Length: 539
Image (cartoon, rainbow, N blue to C red; front, side, top):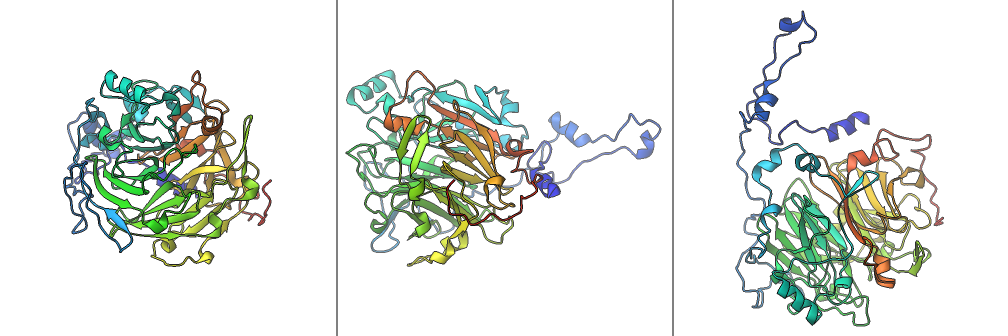
């Protein structure tokens, strides 16, 4: 097991692109056998460090080009979009939008140079970064008391305030995603006065509490046009460099004016150009009364960019919509395990006590080829203490009726206050999750039975980890998990204090965070592999 773990975490030195013709020179052992202080000399790293040699570049094809799969047009955003019909009652939309340069001249820091991928340094080493705070293995890179936006001018900002389009205290970051040089943050329109629902920042921080930059630009953010972004909850970047954005279409959900302002939709952007390359509008039968599509996870095998599936969860009407990229088809799956557990509907966070009846929310995919021939989708309800799973192959088959036997209970209950919003699983089969009512981040090694004794706590803080709402993994060689904390219950019930830091962006290296703990594959207890009882109790 230790050897497997070492192999999966080993990285090539210096470059990510292998040499076509290695130039390794080693002295003959006889040359230095008389002097043990001498050692073989490898010229390749030396020449690389001096920039004398560079790897031979392989010709790369654009992964975003599909053979006879998509058509592209350049629409005027004021004109109706052209729709793709996947059947008589469904609609999708496929187009490529114009790219409007950011008026602040900010795109450059967001697009990594080609030779950046050849560096083997971490971001911290490369940019000499110092975190604002350290919480166990987690480092804080950004933090805000309130959220502001990078308006084109101070006049534009003042006008937005006067019109009520920007109300500072009503803006709450909810979702996070990281890709190359960018951090993406979603801001669903819980209340009035949220001008931007999807924003971006440079991954290398330049200031502690920067104004957020609209993604891809200001033109995309308006409630007056349902073809644009309405209210984004979660997003994910796939391995092909595309950003999948789940737009719930629902606004003011915390007030009596809650409404399905626009139909839910899925938007896919090419992050090399920030252009929209795909759009799918949810079918009418998928939009149930009081439903809320809030989370998304992408399933791609063997880097086949055209053969991609999106699994999108409806937290309030308890279903998963599966979207197939190749032909634009979608179907909805339901199961009783998607429902909330009434025994877990009570939440307590510090002095706050409240009740939520949220169903299926968090989802995590096992790595392709890890332990199983198939991938497993692990999932749980927000108001629940248990984890469940289903084979991804089952979800990928178009269905008219769900098979309840496909969905299984995983191990043991997490116990009282074991609420999890988001979870992810890395390439080594380690699951990470946020315990939102325990101010904690946890982990589980999927090689071991799912029981409380095998669930580790990797960080905890009543100051910096108050309601860690979202969690994602980046795609760097030395992989990090990224966490967004936002004190959501305080925002909903009391309002946030403007004098303290309410929101944080934090990260931790996955391998460092589990080293020596129960989630380390090399660590086990006397009863680690004893299967837990199928208990039904929560405590």
